[in-house]
Length: 99
Image (cartoon, rainbow, N blue to C red; front, side, top):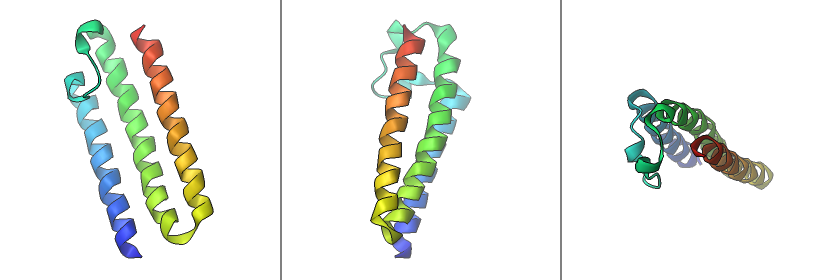
């Protein structure tokens, strides 16, 4: 039972660290799906900050997902729905910034 919580904490920490690295370095090339040639350099800090905020929320949700999976399937369903909503929000926000 506790192994799920440890795995969730490790995955959450990796996600948070990745978001923090992108935010501190403004290095968008590390995000695999972004073609940085189309994005003006002045919007890079905005995108990096958005990615950092999303990584905090997603890492917290992943942790809740792993913890809730050990206890309740209803909480797991809520966490999965929340994760998809966060990813949709990130996609819409990113597309509005890069237009």
